Image (cartoon, rainbow, N blue to C red; front, side, top):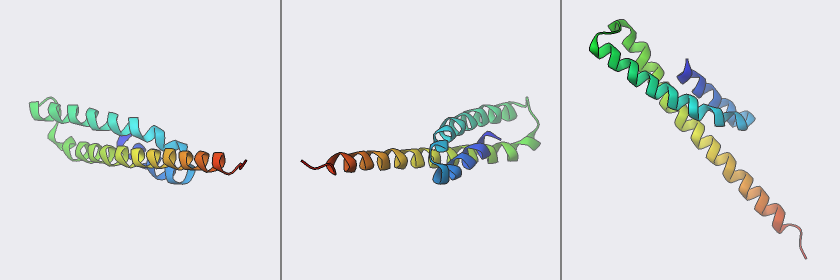
Amino acid sequence: MLGIGSLVLAASGCICGPTAIFGVPLGIVAWFWGSSELKKIETGMMPRSAKGMLEAGRICGLIGGILSLLVTLMMIFYFVIMVAGLSNAGGP
């Protein structure tokens, strides 16, 4: 669920802007949590039938986190360019 949430926040960040910021921590948590759960499957503490869903969530978390980070960086870059343009537009 966290991986899918980070993907959704990355996509909504393209439309709404600031929501992409929250996709980065969700993606990181999904990646690390999925990795720890996969170790439990390998040691036999969890059933092997959960491996497919765990892999999918972990990969969604990785992709969503990276996309959210990229959208956030692009948004910051855009605002820096806008502020620089507004400060130069005043004239003497």
